[in-house]
Image (tube, rainbow, N blue to C red; front, side):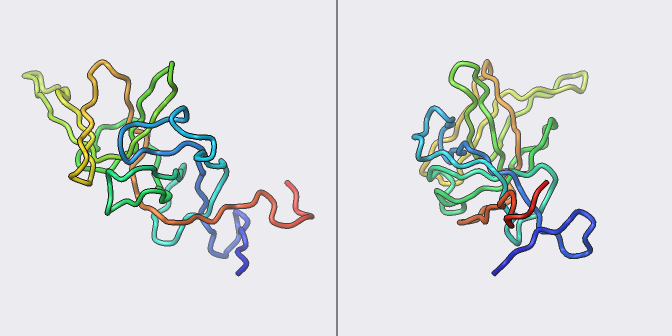
Length: 176
């Protein structure tokens, strides 16, 4: 089967593409590049978005590692995320959380976001406890250190066992 990439203004159905990241996302405790063997790293690039996963601009796919979200999310599957910037409406959502560390490098996990909120008399609020919950009850939640640097960078939208990568140039005579 041949798949054609359509030009921007083509009337044909455009196959959506997502960025493939080299790092892996933990379905367990946070992991980063330094926690992986060279053979576990993925080749960065682009892939076609599988049918059934909703497209949004700036999507990424990352291979999952671990069992804390099984049986809903399988170890080794490709996980798809809508990247987000800012905001705080994550409660009970599956999120791509990043632990930011200048020494060991950034580390990532996929968990269900949970928090307890303290409301002040002036109407403002703060989160007193933030937990990242596994879907598999055999695993423990991650309670975020209030002194740590964390960010929610993506919302989980689906998974696939395989992806089809996009070749930069499909045909020998094709150029920029």
